[in-house]
Length: 366
Image (cartoon, rainbow, N blue to C red; front, top):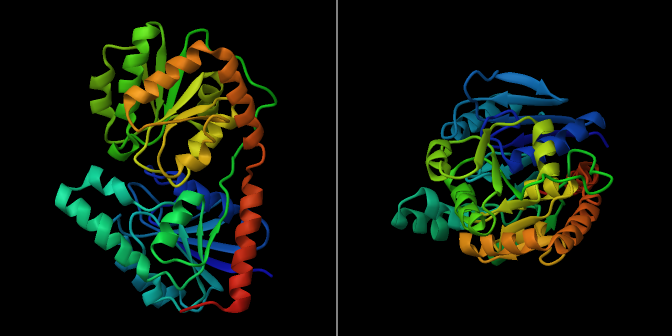
């Protein structure tokens, strides 16, 4: 069965603010396109972006910005796209497109993570409480009747607690071949943070944890790879330590740093999964992450890495322990590498498209 698939998502893979959610949908969609399906993504635009282009077989249509894309996408669908597709995917990234109100084709809801506690980091206290406990749950109620996909048991549990009954987990993948064996590491203890430099990603916690690590290992270093609005503030926090803020790095440079680092630091408010954890694992590097939704899935505590209480002190304590105990760190690295080999985008794309085919056959809709 060859499907015509329409995807609504806030951003596409080329957007400078793209994260794991955009990587996920692009990796599966480009595989669908290569397999004979038609994949079209409607998303917001950004500076110097083309209105329409094809990225690795996926047709991307951009309009508006992060606020206006929602009404514009709805109007564009009604005027240009209705009746042209077999199935529609509404990917939730902070805010849904409310497709149950206007889409007529079979619909699938894709949720990498709920925002939840993240609202508290970007909104004033009263407003954040309102969004976390009323607005987001009210959005979710519109989708409970539809087949829903997510990437982790954590998010599946969140959705089930909101009354969802048809939630399927499809795994994250790795976009490159895992290393054959644990590579040589830097001569000095080297920690790594990878991610968008925005408040909810808590890069400042990685810096504070590193400050504590330096008390035991004065010659340690921290690499921070990523771009974002927190860059200037992070530079000030790190100016008296051996912290290198790399800014945006290429995929090749990211992989090289992951291979050379001893540990990945993964502080977070919450995650859908934490793709950089799996990528670091594929490079032979275990992660220390906060014990929060998502990271509880991508890090097998005491097996492929470590989960700690969500504060820099706990993260630093574990980093010091693993720097000192190279044997334990190597065991984690070997297990993490082995697990990463089981997570492939080909598998994810196959499992996802099988669900879409079933939805189309059942003609599931509100």
